[in-house]
Structures are given as structure tokens and as C-alpha cells.
Length: 149
Image (cartoon, rainbow, N blue to C red):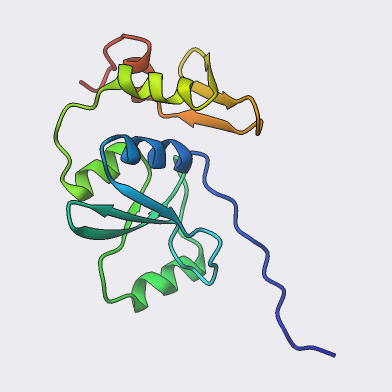
């Protein structure tokens, strides 16, 4: 009988795919590492010669015990983020984000925009993946000024 512990792969937080897409759009490299487990963060990002480590949380999300323990042990850079703007703040990205170009990129990747009242969802036709775009990004994609600006 084996004493191996069964590891259940973690799911990505709902906002991670759009964060990855937006980072790639501005020229960053991304590697999802959310399945490593044992509290390991979700996303590795390379931007302008620097490597960043992010724990991505959905709105209102909190760190698990394993994530808190990892954070205490980790001697390098690590940030917990809840939005694309949080990521931009950490990496120091201050340029205007081209929302129209981002929309065109999503459409070219086979996504269909499903606009709601306060959220925008992107549905990938082949994989049936759904990506929820943050409220402020949805406003910009729809050509409106978000309330935070």
C-alpha cells in the first residue's frame, strides 16, 4: 500500500485568464503554475527583465493556509493580486492599455463577447471556456468611461 498523498489539481481563479491575456498583450511573458500545489502561487510573469510571482485571487478571495505558509517561507518577490490593475501596479506598467486592440485579440483567439450589465464574459467557442473581464475593463471594451477614472 502506498503512502503517496493524492493531489487534486487547483483550478485557475476566474480572473486569471484575462490577466494572462492582457499581460501577453503588453509584451510580458506568462506561465501559469497554479497546478503546482502546496501553496505555490498561480502565475509567473516576465516583464522587462524582471520575474514576478503572483497569487491571483478573484474579487473577495482570501489566501488559503497553504498559500499563507508559502508566502511566509518565500524569500523572493511575491504579490497577491485581485485585478489586472493590481498586476500593472506591481510591475510598474503605466502606459495606456489599448482596450480596442485587446478586444480584437480576444476575438481573433476565437472568443465571443457576451456583454452584461456590469460584467463582460468572453466565451471560447472551441473549448467552451468562459473568461470574466473585470468591471473596469468591460466599460473600456464597450467604449464607456469606467466610474473609477
